Image (cartoon, rainbow over all chains, first blue to last red; front, side, top):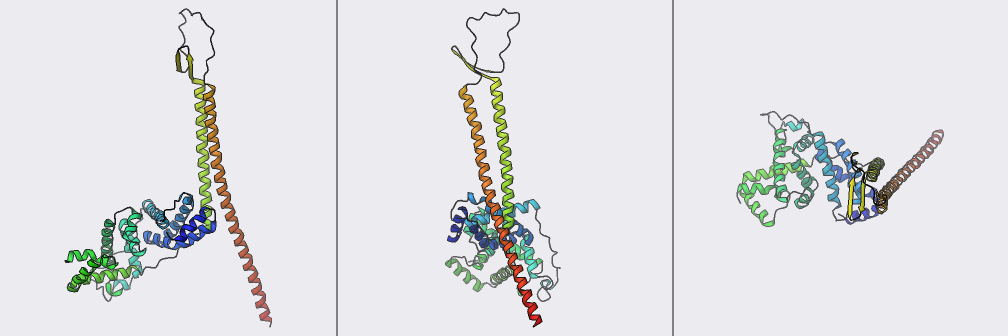
Length: 183
Length: 208
């Protein structure tokens, strides 16, 4: 946790509402981004982000300073995303595969579909444990040891999951018409 | 390093997290293996593709958050009141039951604990003459009664303290909301003044 976070938390716990607002403004973008990558939908991510900071507000007095505020906040967000997935049985709408036998390189299906759409789609279709490690490692830039502490899973398992996630993602993107030349 | 080991290390190389020695071995393998080099190229493209997805910006609505927090606190307060009322009712019921039913007394050299009324003697049997005067049996001792009273008072005091704390938290939230509202009103009034000034200026400019 950055030094400023510790200071802000201390001020907030002493009753300064501006300190809480500063914490929210500092972390709303990273947490919102993280949630969007996990759930794949902007509206759901926004709701979950609001809920995450509400939980932070309500749980604030119980927070014990251990130097891992960001891990605590990410853990709240992660649990919310998992709860939502369980409640809604969130399944991303599956796009049809690209037609077999079509030449992908020049007249690629990617030219007809937005690359961003198929990447988002392929990410959303990954199983949750693989998506979580991919998002935390690739998008949040966390080290495997940090992810291990956050998810309570051994780092070696996470490395293996990460390699599997990359492979599955590549296979699915190829099915959806992704070609290496375009990116 | 063979191809199987190299493929396992490729994600590590992609994210620059291999040990220097491992990195050197892998680079040496890639220099002589077109298949693994192609695989690494694909992974690099994949990594770039992951970064093309746009991310919508997130904005937490603090006014809504404070309102949600106030509702949550109010719900918790109601729940606590219900629990406290149930506890008090249970304590009162137990007190009543104990006072009416349980009999504890020291009778000569015996210590008697009895639940309910004593069994009735058969009518036909001759009633024994009391040899000594009947003494009043203490149903519940004064000490026990005092203990129960203290317990009930302690529960009531605890509920009162929780009520007080939650009320203070709610008052703080209300004050915060009111302050936000006032600031918003002031901003709106400033905007209206600015608009009026702009309008007057534009009218003057039109006449000239």
